[in-house]
Image (tube, rainbow over the protein chains, first blue to last red):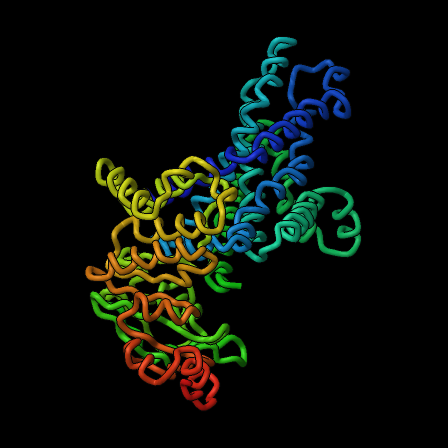
Amino acid sequence: MKNTIVLFKRELAGYFATPVAYVFIFFYLVAMGALPFGLGGFYEREQADLQPFFAFHPWLYLFLIPALSMRLWAEERKSGTIELLMTLPVTMGQAVLGKFLAAWAFAGIALLLTFPMWMTTNYLGDPDNGVILASYIGSLLLAGGYLAVGSFLSALTKNQVIAFVLTFVVGLVLVLAGTPVVLDPLASAAPSSLVDAVRSFSFLSQMNTITSGLVDMRALTYFGSLIGASLLASAIVLDLKKAD
Amino acid sequence: MIEIQELCKDFGPLRAVDRISFAVKKGEVLGFLGPNGAGKSTTMKMLTGFLAPTSGRAAICGHDVAKSPLEAKRALGYLPEGAPAYGDMTPAAFLDFIADIRGLAGADKAQRIATVVKKVNLEAVLHQRIETLSKGFKRRVGLAQAILHDPQVLVLDEPTDGLDPNQKHEVRSLIKEMAPGKAIVLSTHILEEVEAVCTRAIIIAQGRVLFDGTPQELAARGPLDSVFRSITTGDKVAQAS
């Protein structure tokens, strides 16, 4: 536990030691601020909620999360620090968890900095703050699940560009699994139980449930098991091919 | 304090390390010699628990590296090949991080960091990012990290590679100074280094131990580089003229 915290702190400080953190947060906030107004019709709807804002999160994360997760392990491999890390008295579990939690905390900090959106809505009208809170939790869970998948894909390679592309493609599949793009062709060919299963594995449908104000057990189980399974897979892959 | 028994490592069809066995006692400095690709680094990676051996076992201070890795790694200080370190950190922050991982705290931690910084002469660059440092300073940061917790066993993979003659001399003096209280293994392909710091030399090529003895025994066979060549390639020793 103590080692996980030490690794977490080093990793999180590492984000802010380079311009990466500031560039990331800058673009994150610009996109999070501009998209709901420009494309989402935030004003035109004349409704005091953040629905247009949260609707963009799965799509924005498609670009931002791979940028965050690509360096997690690929960089350790590339620079050789993985050899240093793995010969220090830390377990693989502590290393995987510490680094993942740091990336998640960083995504959380970026998400928190969107609070002016919440303030604006409360100034302009009288939104349901319970729904907004649930949506923030949902967005954070989505970021965590996607980051864990990214951690696994980053562990597969020493090339950050490959890690980015892999994570983007897998994320795209997971998001699109909830849209007609995937579901319509599937519905004509497969039984409806399979269509429902595919839909329920999608980031989009999980997010839709939560942004309607419902953080239910199914969503928590979904993201919890996604994070758990992906981190376990990261640890196994790292253990098998540490030196490659 | 270091025990290696019948260690083997296969990479696909290639046998990189072939039944290597040796033991290192306290006070010994073992020089690990061999041509590039002989299996020096692979052996060290297995000894330090980074790579799992195909067969055989390695133990540090009685702790089997495969069965109780944490205990073995606590007793160990390791400078990996190329002295990797987190480039975005300063040496001060990096050593602080290593100290935390090693469980050092409070006055003890501050005192240990101050001691190693002084030992490897890092004062001048303590607050510069590691990626901006010269090769010599990077190597010293790696050394500082390895000796920070005053380990009983020290494994150094090419500790003087890329250093200038003065820096080489400093590192060798440091190793000699630490030698009496520790078991040290270092790899090198600089033959003079073995004579300068080691109490024992092992020469390996193609994964096998071809010579195990004192540097004096090695020197008695003739000029060092032709002895090395004859052992590792099978050529006859050129007569000293």
